[in-house]
Image 1: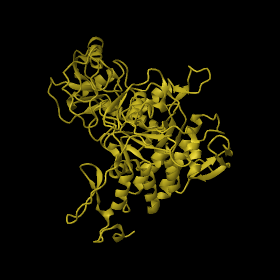
Image 2: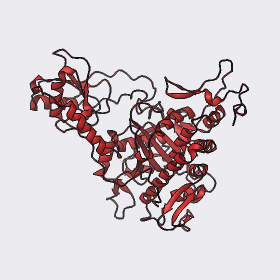
Image 3: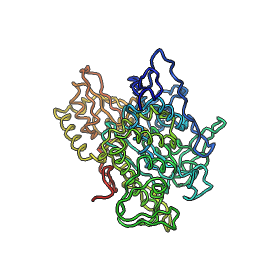
Image 4: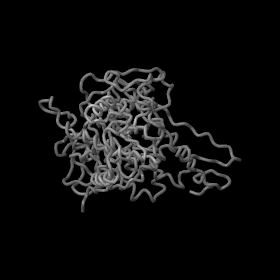
Length: 569
């Protein structure tokens, strides 16, 4: 496609007019001053696909632009006061198959073929949902990023009524993946959340089609996770809040796709290779799947059948199906990386197919924002993308279990690793690096406990943590020159100790007393006077005074890597 055929009379290639705005970190169309800039149509803003269902409005948290809250009265962090309401994060931090095609598809079209025509077309494809103050306004900037991918099981579309309840016009969170991207963008963890996980769904708010707000009460008893979307008017923002309650993470964005996306995306990439140890036939189970042992390439209806099928698998359970879906995702990632990157026509087909079936939050509701997100995600080596299922066990409340609950031992380990941005592919390396760094920082003399001066703030720790720590330091450790300063000006991701170079001996002693890891040590560059205290800010990783803050251990659950092929031979 030459420049003239793209619609520029002067021969200018519109693709060359896409430039990176250093202030926003996004790609923008810059036309010549002499030419009138075409008005770009906005994305379709819609409630959940298939209904006039509500969309989320501000009310839960303050990460999006919202009316300024009333000033919070100053108060000490003491038992009885409770933790302050979470402050807004600083701006810029922050069916499985569909993420693959949707996000990487946009990465692929980020080159010269991404002309204005395609931008306009893709912009018009995207559906957006306003989820209020849940999530982030920025596509992707500093810090770890948590993306929720929701596979909606709504049966609209040709042939889809054969896959279950035909009266389901809104859909549910049938296949859900939490995609955690590390702060340094070197690795990612993809966690599949079983639809039959029994949890309590929190209260949430949604905006109705008439603009009014509907407050949706949460569940009072454990409920299937898939009901966090589509039931009682719950929108994707409700699903995000539910995942936040489960994991303790803050989610930045969501992407939602339906059955049609599986068909169109798998076809757009030219089919996806799958491999079976034995023939898989589900002629009577609803999917009509009939595949031989060994390698096959599936696309369209066969791809959807493969992802939906659980008959003929080991236990014919949803967990078995999740494992097959993860292998499919890995295979499609490789297909995109190895084949589609070099084909402009395939790149555009993938982007077009993805955005037609895509619903996102307004924080990523444009091709340029999706491109910003996708370019960052595209930097991750496939071998450093870990796929796993949320650790669960059979529901002990059921005589014959058909649902699952969180594994009380392994799930907290995984959540801790994600909260602390620890890679499942590099845990040992990070532990070694941390130990080496800590040994270097803590090498040297120690001050006496009585010489330590420190101000203690609560920046995301348990309620009353600052006061409890102060009491522990003064009464049990001899750190009399310590002060409780209440809540920190802003929450921190992890506990941190800030100190001047001439306070290093005090810092080393306090680190010894509290069991602080090297990552908590934040030395400054200028010396402090004799009466200036260090600053200790307790973060979400702080449990209680006297309990060392340590790096999470490896979670004992089956994992796979995106570079692993289904057929080993």
